[in-house]
Image (cartoon, rainbow, N blue to C red; front, side, top):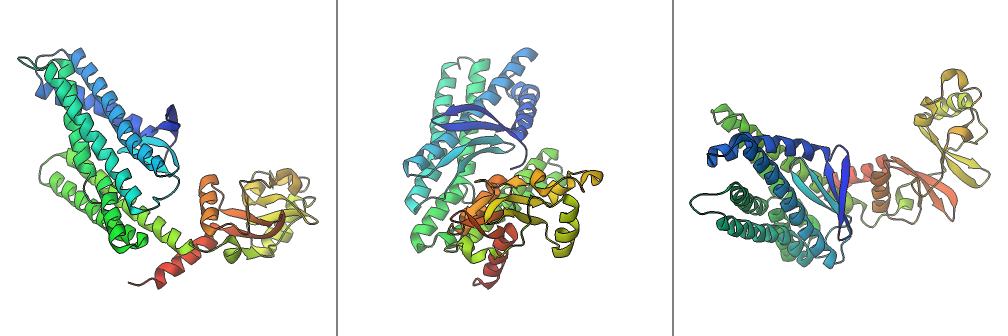
Length: 375
């Protein structure tokens, strides 16, 4: 997911965040409801009334999506899964999990909780809208009816058996329980999601070309998202499978070339970077690990100052963010890289430097394992 997210509120210990893309879609949807849907379906209201109907409709959608994802999160937490928060973005919401479900039962109940909550909301909204329907719907009743129908659509769409939609997770839980193989179940469910995404894209393109309108391009965008998410989930599964049972010690580069902190930047360039053609060097003093220096830090030093500035002045100090123990799992190393945006980590044992490990080291074993996997 790209772009920055803003934390709005914390509910049950979970950060509720909004990505900038959701702000865009909220504004667009408010306009579409106020200028298109509500005037076409419910005639006779003022322009100002249609606008507040559109705004309230979007707020109701926001609340509905948050509650849908909150249902996932709370059920997942009841099974001991760590949940980081909920983020709303361009095409809906995402409950951010730190770990995968421990067993098929947890996967099933976590997945089904969202659609069930959406159906409950639909019943409540539609029931409440009936209270405002005498000879015709009032503006508030019209918004409630819209939200009721929207939650029904949300539940139905999410139950399509295409991973990572909720229905795809239910399908994965069933396949997992049947075969007892989490990786196989994820692979099958992800392929189903990819096929569904392609189907949506084709449907949208054909619709747009045959006169159904440019709104059909939304189906293309939705299809692209579903296919990307499905393929991404499949790749993550393959990565976890390839790294399973492997430690940082198994994959790290031992005896890395190091540099002293009193070396000038000019010397670093001439005697280390050009000589070894490496972009990253641990900085040590005797047996003590001090930090690291890379091309990123070197580039920030103006050329005329490089003969005077030392490595110790520009290095990144060793910390929990850029170091990892040799006994840690390879999966933990990858998780730390993704969480800190560091593509290289300093590997230590009892506080001493014993190697370095990079994302390239991890991806190399993933690529080899994928090529050797049964067809």
